[in-house]
Length: 339
Image (cartoon, rainbow, N blue to C red):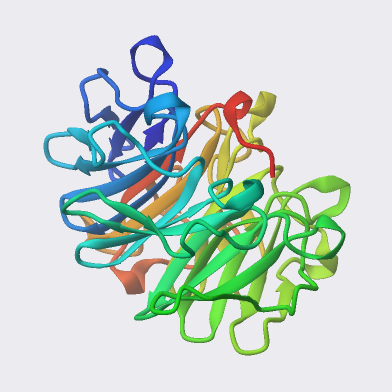
């Protein structure tokens, strides 16, 4: 879990949460790091990479390598930073991460970067020209291809999504610029041909929604019957096992605090994993890693605990060996960038 306000003086911090005991422990001993960590990816054992929208010089963005054993988070640019508002991050191969930035292109449009985890160098893949309007979430499921959700690139200022080629840097709208939804943010593409997208405002009354999107046709269909939506402000999404996605929502808990949901990709049902009580302040991204359960039998993800019975609508995780470690990114709602 990454928290934008848990360190001294309101800086960020991050936590390891044990799904067997429910205990969450600061990995820096409460010393904190960065300023406003926003997105997280943990591609290999022992390492997580985190984007921060405000930790570079002059308030620009930065990114960090964080050691899950020692808790140390180190700026990969030496604190110089890069881009403007780096949001989404995905690290599909050893040594390389791709980052979507909502404001680094010409005229304040978005851009995307290839970042080297050894040197910390991040290079614009468009030469600084940018693309789209506000690219936020990014997932790179196969060699040479990334999919990016943009909150504002469709017609009438609705959302859109793009297929981007990591070799040529070309990004093409998958809806021919027509767009879909309202404010698509998080994206995860767990299987060939399919991506799941969390949208912050596509449900009735501007509540959240989520979509199944076809990478061949570009069509995105609401997964809640009749487009009824769920939650309040869903941001990040991760789909670690067949049939199940987890969604971080910045505003769905009691009193406007955060919450998170287990979502069934067959039925479209999204169930609060805290029973609607919520947690934290504003969780916006998550990365789920599987590990063998401590005891035999089925394990279900409910409030980061292993329990004996499932939440309605949540697919059993037994086939995947149970839920092991869950990493959340969290920031204050007052600091969230506008879509």
